[in-house]
Length: 109
Length: 365
Image (cartoon, rainbow over all chains, first blue to last red):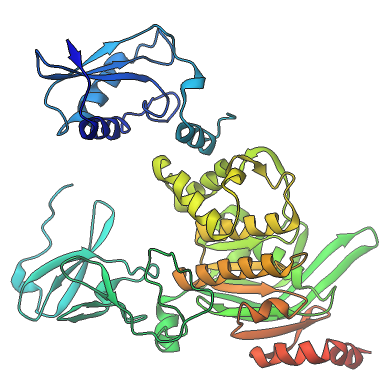
């Protein structure tokens, strides 16, 4: 049964995941709103990252999984990604910081 | 972070420092008088000055330029020897707030490490409907980094022409003379090459660029000048902090460049560019025109701040002396009919305040 994370761990994980950059947009997955949930799997003592991608057919799931693994190194020992496709991602999920970054890169948003 | 061998300990004498660049970061490796080795960041908080060229004391590594001392254990600045305080030094700055770049060591020392922009016998013309108009008729001017030069004169004397010619405006045709930057011929460089070399122009009439946001424009310019993209994660905050120093609302970052900006907002945006791009020389073309007293103070604060933090050279073009009360010039040059008619220190500006330009125009007649 997945449980919620301690606030301190949640913050560390979220900070770490900000190093994972969506290759198409150039902004990190947290500020894009791609990370839907963070939970803890007590049975396996592992982090569960429930996340999606900007398009369902994206062929880069392996690349992003690898980046997530690198970014979480030192923060958690074990994790798994729970790929979620419903509800589908939309640009309204982008945070204000994410919008600032996209504008700086040159997107009209 | 990788480890890098610098040298055997014995090779570094006690009370000396050596500069080393590791992973792109300049580091000062210091051996103190007791023989212990330390390593701290090599860049002074004032600007691009190498601390390892300074003095190794027991209580820190002292910067040769202003006397700021940096702890050998934490790398943080501890003291600053300067006593004069500019009324415009920012109180919330995270860098050392000591002021007055006048204490920059002897002139020859400054010139050895600082850049020089030299204009010799410059003659410039422009094509008009009535034929070729000769505007500059042999201008001589030298600016060293760290110096503030005011260029004043009656309308039509060629002040803006000088600014645009240095920047590389295609309409201005150089008939003769030279402009060199540390000996390199500026007139051979394209406009963007001049910008990358460290020249900056704050325009008198900034142009609107619909479709390009301020944040995108600034980041693109910064990338072009530095040769690498500033971190996207920190760029937002960097711009926000610089904007708040100039009393610009953060919403400006999302607006299109200069679109719908008031005169004061346009001028502040020019100075925002100056603070973010950190050029070696800034040419400010009548930055004071159309500004009320509050905007003038804020803009002047920005110029002084950039001057203190980076030691930039300033060529301040102005018709009125008002801005010179806030930005103190080291040298004043009076332009009349395309040439330098008189040069002096700030007392010349005071004389112009009292007498105006009549003296030169009468002499011409």
